[in-house]
Amino acid sequence: MSAANSSSSGSLGIKLLLAWTLVGVPLAWGVWQVFKKSLDLFK
Amino acid sequence: MALFSFLDREHSVAGENYSRWLVPPAALAIHLSIGQAYAFSVFNLPLSRLVGVNDSAPADWKLSTLGWVFSVAIVFLGVSAAVFGAWLERVGPRRAMFASALCFGGGFQVAALGVALHQFWLVLIGYGVIGGIGLGLGYISPVSTLIKWFPDRPGMATGMAIMGFGGGAMIASPLSTMLMARFKTPTSQGVAETFVVMGLIYLAFMMFGVFSVRVPKPGWQPAGWTKTPSARKMMTDGNVTVDRAVRTRQFWLLWTVLCMNVTAGIGVLGQASPMIQEMFPGVISASAAAGFVGLLSLANMGGRFFWSSLSDLVGRKVIYATFFLLGAVLYALIPATGHAGSVVLFVLGYVIILSMYGGGFATIPAYLRDMFGGVQVGAIHGRLLTAWSTAGVLGPMLVNYIREYEIGHGVAKADAYTTTMHIMAGLLIVGFVCNLLVHPVDERHLEAEQSLLSPANA
View 1: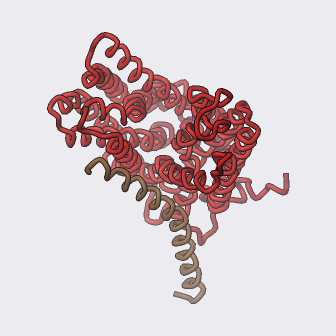
View 2 (view 1 turned 180 degrees about the vertical axis):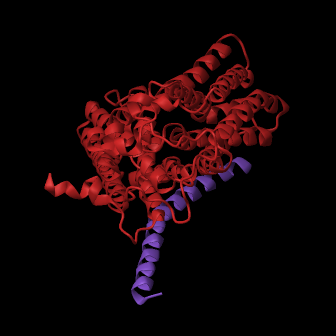
View 3 (view 1 turned 135 degrees about the vertical axis):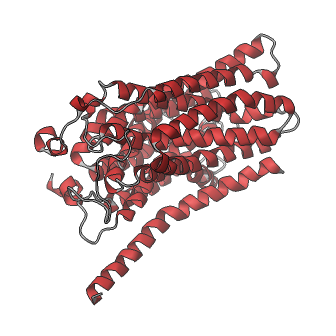
C-alpha cells in the first residue's frame, strides 16, 4: 500500500471516529438518563 | 444564489475517499435534534407559570392551551413532509437539511421571543409552525440518501436514522430541565433563555449533518455487491414517481398498515403512566410509573433499529405480519396479566408492543423502497407520513374517550382499559389483512431510473 493511500485511509478512520463520537456520546448520555429513571420500576 | 451553491446536489456528490458510514451520523445529527419534539411537554408546566412563577396566575397560559403547540408542530411535520418531499428529491438532502436546521433552530428563537413578550401566538408560530416545518423536512431528508448508500441493507440504514428520532427526546428532556434550572431566577422560569440556547445548539448540531452528508455518484454500488434481479418477489427493480405512487393500491394499503400500527402504540404511550398505576393500584407508585414510561421509550428506540435491521434478512412483509399478529395477541392477553397481578408480564408485553411501534416507523421507508424503488422514496415517504398525523389524533382519542366512557358507566378503573386493548387488537388485525394484500406494483407504473433523474422530471 502506498504512503498516500495509507494516509488517506487513516484520515478517513479519524473522520469516522469523530462523526460517530459526536452523535454517539449525546445519544448514550440520553439513554443512560432514561435507563436510570426506568430502574425506579424495579425498586 | 451563488453564496449557497455549496448546498446544491451536484456539490454534495461523494469523492473517491468518502465512506458511506459517514452518512448515518449525518442523518442521526438531524434526527437526534428534531426528536426533541417528543420532549416538549417538559416545558408545559414552566410555560404555565411565566407570570405567577411559583404558581399559575390568572394571566398565565393554561395547560390545555399549551397543548396546541405540540399538536400544531406535529400537524406541520406531516404537512411539510408531504408538500416538500418532491422538492427534496430535486434539490438533494443537503439543501433540505439546511432548510430544516434554519427552521428548527429559528423556530426556537421566535418561540423564545414569544415567551419573553408573553405572546402565545409567537410561541405557536415559532415552535409550532416554523419549527414544525423543520421537523417534517428533517424527518424525510436523509431517508432516500441512506437507501441509495445502503441498497444492500436499506432497513438497517433508515432504522439507524429513525432510531435517532426516538433518542432525541431522551437527550432533550434532561437537557431542558438542566438548562431551565441554570437560568431560573426568583422572577423567571428561565424558559426563554433555554429556548435560545437549545435553538443554537440544535442549529450547530444539525449543521454537522448538513456539511457531512454526501450523495453517491450516479450508478454507485457498494463494493462486492451487484444489483441482481430481485431475489425477493416483493422487491421491484424499477421506480415509481411520487405522483403515480399515491394513485396505487399499494400506497394506500401501506398507509393503512402504518396508521394501524401507530394508532395501536401511540395511545398507550401517552397514557402509560396513569394506566399502569390504575391497573395495579397500591403496587405501582408514581415514580415506578415514570420508570415504566422510560422503559417504553427505550423499547421504542431499540425496536426501531432491531426490527428494521431484521427486515433486511426476512423481508418487510414478514416483519409487519409479526407486528400485527404478535401485537394483537399481546393486546388481547394484557388485561389478563392485570387481573393476575403480574407486573412483570404486563411490562414485558408492553415493552414488546412498543418495540414494534418503533419498528413500524423505521421499517416503512425500506418497504416503500421495495414497492416503488429508491429514486423518489423520500417524497413518497413524506406523503405516507400523513398516516402518522391521522394516528396521532385517532390513538389518544380511542384510549382517552373509551376509558372515560367505561368509568362513566361504572366500570372499575383497573378494568377500564380492557375494551380499549381489545379494540387495539382489532385494529392490528385490520393492519394484518392490509399487509397481506400488499403485492408488487404493476409494471405499467414503473419508469426508467434515468428518466426520473433527468432535468425534465427533476
